[in-house]
Length: 224
Length: 241
Image (cartoon, rainbow over all chains, first blue to last red; front, side, top):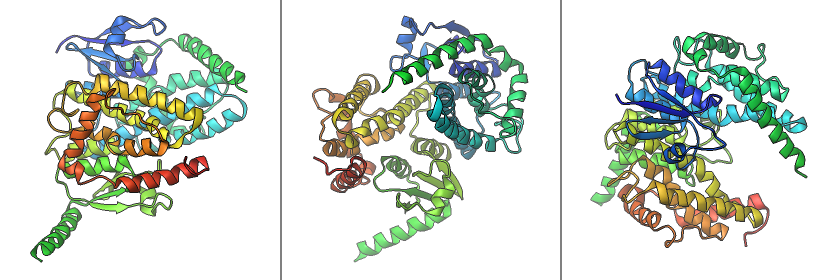
């Protein structure tokens, strides 16, 4: 099938979802750790427009953008499908993936990195977006149904990454009473061996978000 | 006389066919996102019923079908709503595979999706030019030029269309550049797409506008400009200079 390489960082939630997908499909790959403060020629060449990770390399071609990579992986390795077969179910899964990436991630990060009144406002928006996700789990063990699917991988940042963001930001978003389904899902998700294998060490993430959130807060403090 | 009856019969048969296919498109005449879906349906010859929404007085149906974003377009097929213009087009492509809009090859498909996402993500940044002024306008201009330069340099290559010899999903995604960008430049009093800096995009725009389905389905330029002027005044609180 050709060699598969993944240009990534261990702490990026966008990269984790690709590792999960490859392992889910039983695809062997080489993990190329990227230093984002000193980007490699390989990365710059493989993702000329955005210069970001993850980038999948396969058969001499490069594939940036995590959601697009997931669809590519699902098309090339057809066993253990990630996306549903039915077109309207697929449209729904893609809709929630887009929603999660546009509203939930940045909403949650926004709530965690701000302070005071700004944080209160951001918290409201983040909680609203999480409520929409909670609803999607009604009657299901995973977003994909009985088994893991595409949307579980896309939303898979929540159990670890959100927890770390909350800790550094000094804020609690995913309260168990408010989001029982997401809580239960988080626990089921983290039990899965292939998921656990690709999680970065919590300490690494703590340092990363400590630096990132401090930086954002210091910028905000400087503004008139 | 015969022609008039023909058009009437054609219109009735379209409604009947759309009843059978159960396809409704909720849209607004100004929206380039709605036109994307219209073009896709017409390129595939799929009949549908079009429902014009008043964006200042959204119908109960629209709010029911798209409770999260409350936006157009929404495609309703057999009672099931699909939202987000490019997701709607992927749905259309999977349900009605004739006259394909996406390439078959997985790599080419991924490349097409990359540019679709780029068009979607960056469009709003370019739209800012009609509704900014002063320092904000300068910033919007700079950002827009960077975006256009990226497409000019990396997106089109030497092809006639993003889709190759025929238009495809990426051409449709960039459709806002064809008609809406010109109107926004006029209202904002800026010129972004100079032909000497963007020869490929200029050629692409001319070719795209000549495609029959596109030519027959574009909003009136003057109506669009007038509408954008009103929006600009509403947002900036003064008559446009």
